[in-house]
Image 1 (cartoon, rainbow, N blue to C red):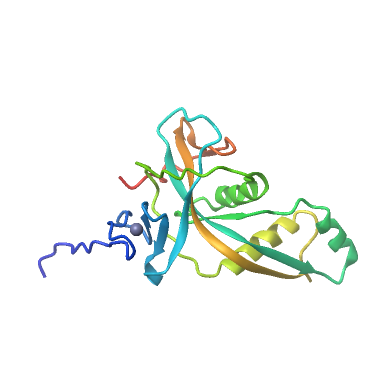
Image 2: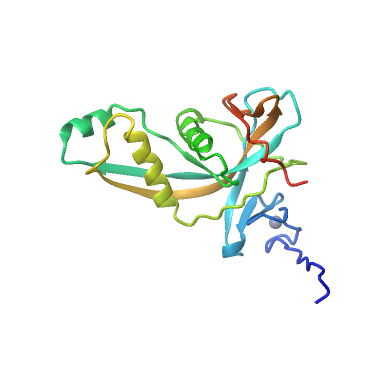
Amino acid sequence: MSGERLFISLVCPECGAELKGGAPARVFLCMACAKAFVMDRFPESMRLIVLKPTIAPQAKIFHVPFFKIDGRFRFSAPDEHKVRAWSNMNPLRVIYYPAFPNLRNLYSEDLTFRYAMGLDGVETDDERKDISFVDGTRAPGNFDTIARLVWLAHLDRVADVTGAEAEFTVSGVDYCLVPFERAEDGLKELMLGLTLKGFAELAPNE
Ligand SMILES: [Zn+2]
């Protein structure tokens, strides 16, 4: 063994372009075809979407990946009070689940809730030119379970979910790049204007 690393260049099965992604990536991107390839399941792909910031950037933008999970949640419980309390809650819309190294679970879970409530009618950047991004390092296959657990955590805020029967049916998953910038005390995401304190380890792959 020479000790040198072997680099295998990954190319898009549709257009032949080199796929983009750094060393730790498990998800690789073709910007031309707007597709995200999960290595464990290559050549299967997801649609790649890039969100346009709604907040004017103050620094260089880089993008942070999320799995954007669409679908339908159903629940029932023997206790009518609970069902009524849950029915009065604002429903979650699309679930944005982090595809990046989730080192500060609390923040990213909170971001998932904030996005589920607040990221409606956002515009996409269909040019996708010269964008830098954080590598997707997770490749979860159980999106229905993830979405169901996010929903249960949401419902649990108004009434204990013990005894609830819940089911989430996924109708589609996209790979979604969300614009961020570096702020003095952490990272600022440019959709709702939230600053995530710390998070210094989250950096684009250049
Ligand atoms: Zn391609």
